[in-house]
Amino acid sequence: MLLIDCPWCGPRDEAEFRCGGEGHIARPDPDTADDATWAAYLFDRDNVKGLGFERWHHRHGCGRWFNVARDTVTHEIRAIYAMTDPKPTGGA
Amino acid sequence: MPRLAYSAFSLLRQGLNRHRGWPAAWRTPEPKAHYAAIVVGGGGHGLATAYYLARNHGVTDVAVLERGWLGGGNTGRNTTVVRSNYYFPASGALYDLALKLYEGLSRDLNFNIMLSQRGMLMLAHSAHELEFARRTVNAIRRNGIDCTLLDRDQVRRRLPILDMSPDARFPVVGGYRQARAGVARHDAVAWGYARAADARGVDIIQNCEVLGFIFEGGRVVGVETSRGAIRADRVGLAVAGHSGVLAAKAGFRLPITSYALQAFVSEPIKPILHEVVLSSATGVYVSQSDKGELVVGGGLDLHPSYSQRGNLPVVEGVMSGLVGMFPCFANLRMMRSWGGIVDVVHDSSPIIGPAPVPGLYLDCGWGTGGFKAIPAGGTLLAHVMATGEQHPIARPFGLERFRTGALVDEAAASGIAH
Ligand SMILES: Cc1cc2nc3c(=O)[nH]c(=O)nc-3n(C[C@H](O)[C@H](O)[C@H](O)COP(=O)(O)OP(=O)(O)OC[C@H]3O[C@@H](n4cnc5c(N)ncnc54)[C@H](O)[C@@H]3O)c2cc1C
Ligand SMILES: [Zn+2]
Image (cartoon, rainbow over all chains, first blue to last red; front, side, top):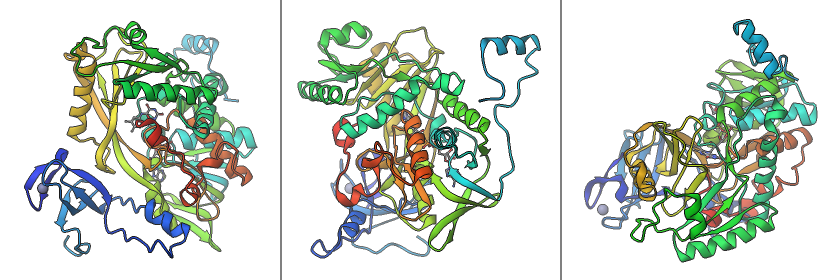
């Protein structure tokens, strides 16, 4: 069971949240991207075993989105940061 | 053929010998330096691939490399439901190929996989669900697969313990049923394929983790393992939840996300549930094992995971759904629960065929529902590895569907795909 520290509401039970999948996926220009690029954007994922970067949504709370750096093996949350922030590095 | 055929006669003979004469079901060979084909992953799909390479294509110079023990992945962790009542024609052909092979598998492998075609009932809880059930039944029958729509009374007669009172937490208005669906013994499927493949000369190598790939001229020509380099003319991957990890080592990404899926087993009770029951509204499905335990499953855990442990919110959801449907189970104790790491694809259909790098082939993306497909996954991966051509049944399931947009969207069609 995860205890997720919503930047707006504080620590809350994981059941209030929804994991929105991998973060930091940049949308290619739809007018110039070929099918392979577009398919990779839509479907391909790093699916990391270990430290991964995800978007989470406080669905049954404030309704806001934020980023989480989380280990997919131990489930330890290493950092919580804003949607527009870059991936945390170093100690994160 | 296996060295010692299993039969009533051999049982009697070994019994008279106090069971001291049984030979090992398969060898434990040292890996060779080179094979015609390597299959990575000693789950049902990998072992079946090795067997069909040998049986259907005469390719016997094969190794199966398993990092743990045979069937220690999802094959030995699943709730063993087999069925072929899928919505789209491409899926119907795929899963019915598997079910037909399952129907003859105990004889084919000379190993009792304990296939029990007791039927599976999908419940409809609202007028809308019933309407869609009718449409689904029509689609499945059009695929040439047995399936029957049931009204409320027919469900009540089949499942007297289901709460169908006027104030039931989950009202039931009908359902549909595949009579040929049921359960099979998961370990027996892995062991049966392993023994039959070994008898045809396949090397089954356990405790051998693939750590990377050997490339020559852009082509995969072997694997680096925890037991040294092993070269091969072609390599197949059947590693379920770890497909993304191995794809990264080969330099590409897959449209797969790995999640934990849990299952639960109750204390044994007398026979009370005679078929598999699934409710997509509660996200719960349940059957009763031959030992009398209830085998219960539900939906995915809430976030991606490589930890073979489940988390609590899903346990709560599954148990409250189960007791809501079957109040008489409320006093049962759950004895065990566990998780497996499943490889979920956006359209809930598998990926079968060539990988983006030459020399490498995929059979993955079975997600929450690939036990029922083991004979088909093995047949189709063996076919493309041996011939270089996709089997007609595998063609809609190649990786290129994500680029062309021709998804086989069973996720939208059926919701739960166990
Ligand atoms: C709880 C649960 C319930 C399920 N219920 C059902 C059900 O009722 N019906 C159904 O049809 N399906 C069900 N499934 C899904 C089904 O179990 C899987 O789709 C199926 O078993 C996949 O088989 P596989 O051989 O591809 O994978 P696995 O059996 O997982 O085998 C993959 C193997 O690859 C090995 N491996 C991984 N990485 C490496 C490496 N680097 N080197 C060497 N080996 C490696 C693993 O150790 C593993 O043994 C369920 C799954 C779970 C977890
Ligand atoms: Zn919040």
